[in-house]
Length: 256
Image: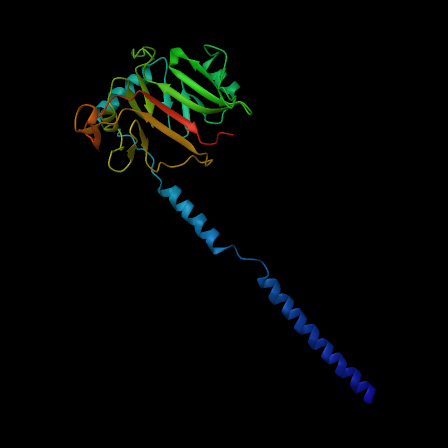
């Protein structure tokens, strides 16, 4: 009898330990999956919010000159469009990162053979009739830089087209920067920044593929002169005065 009682007692103790073990396993199973770090979640949410609120240039479709220029643009034989991530020539789309072969399909054979830099890290091709230069990364033959000039090196006006579209807004070749930004919601106070030689768009929304693309608007900013002669220095930026846009330069910041 005593042996039987001992055996039964041991069985009860074993069952109790087993139950405790299963409970512990279930507890660990419920909590063993590491939760997503709060910091990473917060960063992801902040990035999504930033992307949603990032600036996208809005054309001023109601401006009388917009409608006039837009109609003239559509009648042109050669139509260039430079949007935030997508570029078009005669409704054919291309992008930073596209292959050399795709660019050739759209624009045809370039004026000359590709010209390499001295370190062979990039090469360029050009189309004088379009006032267009394109730079490529040789390892993958990917488009790296797009340069559309508003005039040639002799400062003669380009005759193959008069109007191109920048951020869906028509720009006529003899317009000043300020005349252009009246046709959209760009302004010098909040959305258009400048260096000593050119302009750029502040906090513009990134492309969907998160590719880092840099924009330069080549138009000479005007500054007040302080002093005179060789002793003069640049003072405050003058937003009221502006010059024509000489070129648009779009480039990838990924150079390898």
